[in-house]
Image (cartoon, rainbow, N blue to C red; front, side):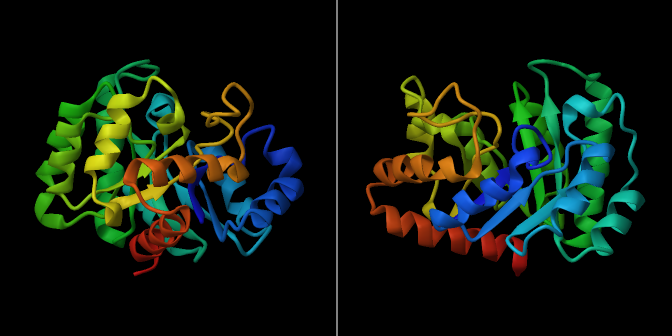
Length: 253
């Protein structure tokens, strides 16, 4: 198993990292991808990836943080290229639900990350909430560039998934698929081909059932994997194997 999206620089994970890693290894997690959300966050991520060989990182600015973090594609490219353990670009994208940052700032930042992903051929980790049309419209402009798209914590519609599949996107399933009111999302993941699915915790957020409401951590990914196996009608070991292969194909090929 691989947790394709966690925030090890956030508390309470950061101060308990040794135990977090121990519990992750105990359930069979091979790799953890810890995600940058701001320039300050990236500085922490750059140090965390050196703590253990299983930890990898990304560089990027979360859409919530774009008003306070003006970033250039050159800055992203430079920092991506100088550290072999930084393997992706993001978390970027659009969040028009909370609108913690101006929409124009979010769009500008998103396109800056896309340009960096094209220049480096790095996977692009995308957050999209209440912005399906806008997210697709921007990505579709770059269709011929063959961007390696990973839709993090995907909660979008089946129609959105269909359009993204035309762009060869990957989709990450989070603990949300275990929630009892997530029937539509479960149906969408039933539709998405298994060779296009990764799994994640988004920890310390979005703990899966039966730990919903608690602080999430990478070892809780087991519950998400079990639910995904149920949704897809296959054995859990099959989900372990295929999602691990998908991650490695996306990030290391």
